Image 1 (tube, one colour):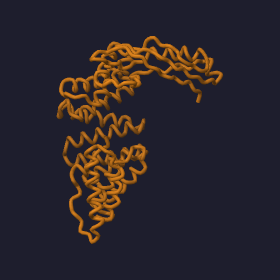
Image 2 (spheres, helix red, strand yellow):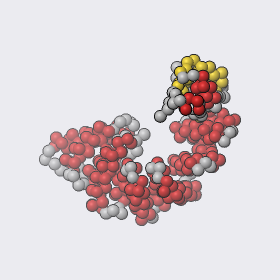
Image 3 (cartoon, one colour):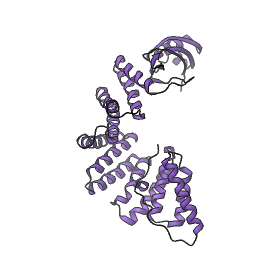
Image 4 (cartoon, one colour):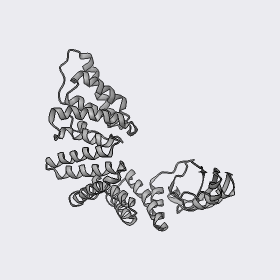
Length: 356
């Protein structure tokens, strides 16, 4: 779900403009109401947000707070691959708000966060996030500071900036320490911190700690929440992968079955693997730069293991078949459930061997 900007949450659109052109005013009001309705119903808001921003420039002028917040709303509605357009809109909003309120004002907070997320430069992102945390600290709001540091850790981690890894890790640790002491274990912040801490731990091959943090997520849902949630599914899925990485298949099985119980089985659905092992490229084929493919049918057991692998079709020779079968036998799946019980099922997969 796309994020809702602080501008919308706080109802920043404060005043009704006084305009001679009532047609534009009416069209803006109608568009903005439709945008809010789409946002509430979790529908695509991109076209409405764009139209509201364009009309808002005429209604409020190019340099008003309202126009800046409409730009943020439009940027928030865009898909993440449109990062250049997002950055342009956040930058426009920041320029307006910084000029009107100052670079250390709370009004620029959303725009700074948006610029940090949408820029492709890790250096710029780090600078924006430092300013973001400074603004939170000036408010003497410890919760806002922790939230800002968690956002900063997440964004820097996604930038894949090795030189800023330690900064991101420090931000996460400081936010995590605050959350553990001050917010409930089933809060969204704690769950987000658990996932991020697990990701950092996995990146440095500390699989035991990653497992500990993800098991906390699962426990929160088991103990405190009465509904299934995507976060719980993600935690179970990651735990399957991590337990297999350290050779604890029995523990992985528990999470395979938990996923199967949570996700209703649909007729003719293709089973997606929870854990994969890439097949080795046969040396003899690699030396000759030969490609190949193998289509296999196999059974997913009630515990999510792969069994009874059979080759249906292959190209390139027997060596590809041998390596494909070896890899497949290490994959894990969520088993099929019927009448509340895990049962065996049959599915197919194609593995392609290609020389780049």
